Length: 71
Image (cartoon, rainbow, N blue to C red; front, side):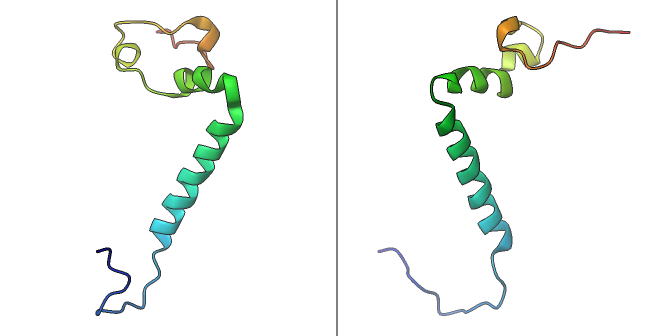
């Protein structure tokens, strides 16, 4: 069974846990509101290992910022 309460009460409020739940909920709602453009946002904002390590490049239409070049 799932425990509903604890025998060791605490006086501290779980601020960090509530903040993480709120942040995850806001990100989920933002992604849900994107609709068909959601996949493009995931590619543009997500980390793709091959692109991160330089073995592949992202489609220029999906890039939010141009790639950095060496000075």
